[in-house]
Length: 260
Image 1 (cartoon, rainbow, N blue to C red):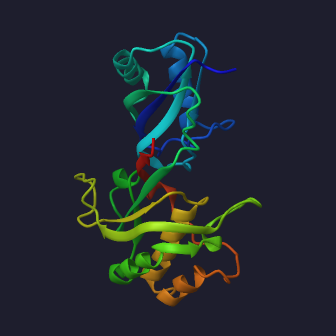
Image 2: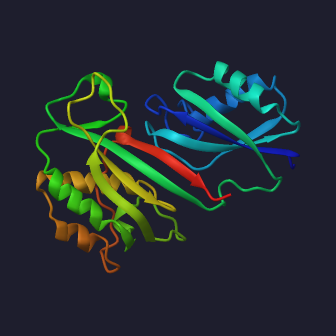
Image 3: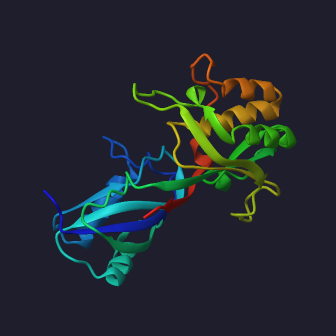
């Protein structure tokens, strides 16, 4: 049944206490929390929400969208205020805008930028755990920066995807990929030096960014070399996904650019 009023809602959230976006049995998810809040805001009136894509357990989003389908037109200013008043503190609504009936949020062209925050050395303050991953010991950041650049461009990402379907397209293009010092987010309990992997492209495979980061960690530890990464991205690789899947808490969907 079609809804006569469609909107796109922009939100951001800290994912540390959630088991990802998608609704699942017996675990707390972001989509479940969004729908419970919408049910209260609209006093039980029929509505539907649809997220722009999945995020893994504990993954955060600085910028995320969901499509909202309603039977009645909504006052946008009222909605943002009342929605935020009833959302938990680790979810915030930023904006809402009307879209034409038939607009497809999932299918529309988009550019996504992911960030992965990390540090190394001594064990960090526990309060930093929801925001970044700490590797106890030393990492060679310079060689990791060179390794990150190897992912940029068009490659075959069979080894950076888990549980693909028969229709999964492994040939993907990464527009940019770099490791830089973290200046985006700071806190008194963060380590003195931290870093961020920034990856930008049109679409990514299941666990792709975390597997890329895991491989870069192995590179920084000296457990593999740059040639290993080059070979892993070739069309004739063995098609077996890598086992070094980095922790999800450091990953953040930093920005989504909708091509509307």
